[in-house]
Length: 398
Ligand code: ADP
Image 1 (tube, helix red, strand yellow):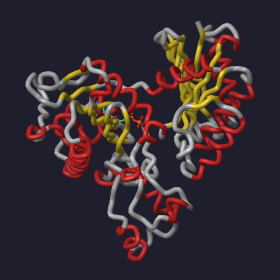
Image 2: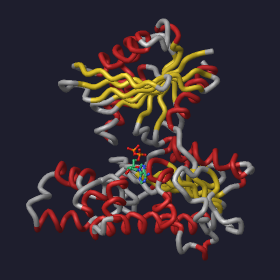
Image 3: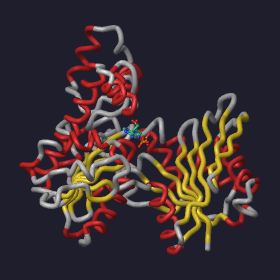
């Protein structure tokens, strides 16, 4: 019996989940926000309780110390020794990390070097890793990459039609993201369909604030909608997804908004998507409420959102030469019957048909009509569990 903690560190936040392994029971979970700012907030959830405290947390090491002390304070663990493993989510693994890895100094340096590909994320992930190394130096420490699952994509899918030197010298290619989620739901789908994953063609739709669609052939990612960064692909909460690249040069020339690389990055990553089109919210629940009240901008934001997902699914039907199932997961995919219904609506030619009686709030599993050739599944994702499982797997290899 061991306890393993899954960590998702952002630049000013640290999300965590503590598991009893190998039972995979969640003992507690929490979030530390506003690290490095005044009035940081630490929330711990366990036994149906949520304990919140506001205090100043200067850095990630201090955040980890507070989290560990909270575990003791709330009697979730009796001492630090009970935690035998930690798994860290890392956003960019580049071409280097094809799978999860045990952390040593070389691995940690590589994660830091890969900050070039994820400047907002990898430095924070590395800070989380260093914090645990400092406080719990002897436990098994593992890094799990968002990109690993997609390293199986063929070159024709991951290369951009740009001058070759930008790939060879600058490593510009498609890396994708949400890999742990796509992999997890693909395997859960195989269980649900009662078939070996090696016999299945799946289209997995992770649709939350960030959204990506993946074509999974025999359990392997063969294409995914996110690109060099998580900005590419479908429309998202605040991200544009794919746009004609010429728009950027045009707006640089003809407006005052696009002056610097930071402007471009901010506008496309933080001010676009549902927020940009609706002009009031990046949150799908707000968009749907406004739609019900007759707000035209919300309706348009919803319609573009659905249209983009539909088109990627269409592409992946072509890439895979058909599919056995389409899987919906993450905040919107799991909870919004409206989005699921609208995406699948009108795809009967492809063999998809959602049963409105099954496509309800809280639905899980198969929501298709009995005769549909392509099953439509709702499967809650669990990225933290994938991380905890990888820690156990690699611990046993040590
Ligand atoms: P993140 O990418 O930040 O992990 P989530 O997977 O939590 O995001 O998804 C957040 C999104 O899910 C938000 O747009 C939220 O509005 C949406 N969402 C959650 N519940 C519902 C619901 N019942 N109907 C529509 N959208 C929902």
